[in-house]
Image 1: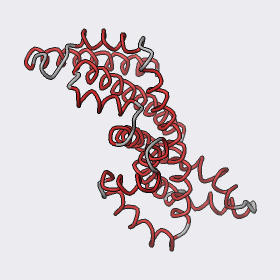
Image 2 (image 1 turned 30 degrees about the vertical axis):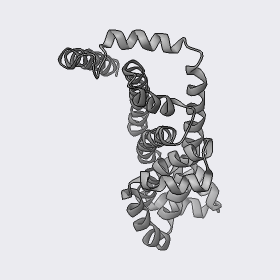
Image 3 (image 1 turned 180 degrees about the vertical axis):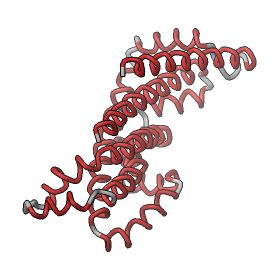
Length: 249
């Protein structure tokens, strides 16, 4: 186990060095018109983290993303358990979910703006419509493949539907459900940032869109670097947790 962990850490460091090297080479090829070097980006990121105007925008995005993620997880699990346990509901609504997942979500944004207006509500709603469907679909598939003996045990114990979901279904299906949570995490973050980019006056997405409009390459590179770093770190942590769960089952 220790050797495997050290190997993964070493491979991760090698990957970071390779990506940084490719970034530097790309900067040498493109120049200052569209890119900044890794060193310049690191320096501007440090400056941005010390800027007072950055943190209110970060807090705004964190609040919107956190709320959207919680709603996506709760709704996704509820829908997934319902469709996974009911054949009729599954036959009727799962094709609707799959079809909805294929719709470009940006086409729904004008409707969300009419429903929620500008501000936090629209950003949260846009994050939710990105994240809830994959969580629901993964949960549905996980519940459908639970061994029937678990369900029979729950019925024999006289558990209510909520107790059945909490005490039997969730633990048994958690490794597969967690894979959906990883996908939902990433898509919810993307949806929240897109919501901030198109109809907001605060947040990381707003800063990024404003920087694009002003051709502020330093700010674009710094924000992109921080978002990539956050998404990559979160993905590594969630993947490690998922592996632990699979090893225990």
